[in-house]
Image 1 (spheres, rainbow, N blue to C red):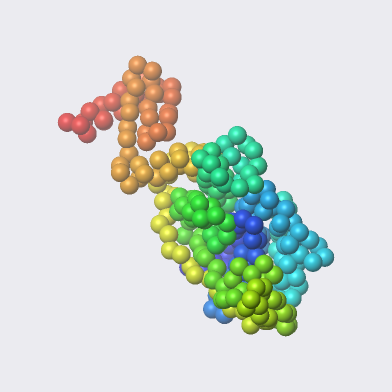
Image 2: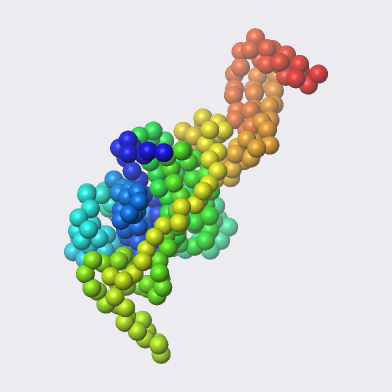
Length: 275
């Protein structure tokens, strides 16, 4: 599919305490020899502690690695600031420094699904989601959220970095000029970041968006409620007619104050299906 007509190209990344995944993914996308894709904006989902690390290591105007990458490879202007760094919150609305409990996991899931829903609501946008960073649950929820709301133009990937640069705290992307970094311990060695290899593994995913109720596509909802709606797509819709209160429930979506004539018609149709 030709995505060149999408005027808004969004890179969405999850990370914990290693924000290198942002610059690694940006490098791999923009330097791809086959199909380079340069985002117009970048968004990062992380913890409270991860936010502060990103502030200093990526977004410091003087030495931030994001700005260094953009300058070094002459990339066009990309919108990425602290306003684009989204902190995961639990169900009480409290910012999380880590994901340690059930309530933290629920908040993480809700954060992911609501951000992805919002970013896929713009028909002029194309979303590229990277799930390489952060705890495994973060990647799982973010990938699942894209499966729920992803469109044909949206993609999911995992960044691959060659050893020993993978997880090295001083490595952010392959540099054009020689830059030496060092490993520690008994087998300490020196490596040149110019020699690093970074690529993307695209991950196929099932798109369930078209089967979700419009209320879930446009409004805010919890992760669990959205998953339940998606399950109804696969298992078949459930229709409940409450004749006394004039309410219809369709796979959990409530429609109230149904006119008596309409309610009678729906009841008649439902009975015909059961007969």
